[in-house]
Length: 98
Image (cartoon, rainbow, N blue to C red; front, side, top):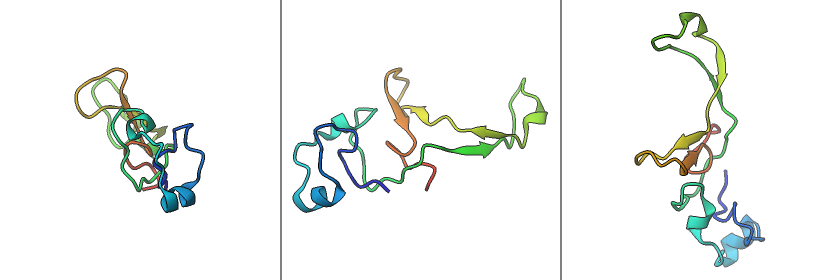
């Protein structure tokens, strides 16, 4: 579980303990994200996710059901399509360890 708000920021050199005791005053939360929105903590990490196909759509062979596949961890923003903004599992939303 990541509780460090400045985990992507080079300006942050202290660990979670020091930040919890003294604060991380140099953090600009908007700089600490892929999407440009502030991260919410605590955050459950885990970007290495896989699953099994349970159903298929038109044009996909039903033979694929049960196949083990990786999950795409870079997601488009939930507020409209913005090509350069994304959410990442375990960063902007809870990840596969949840």
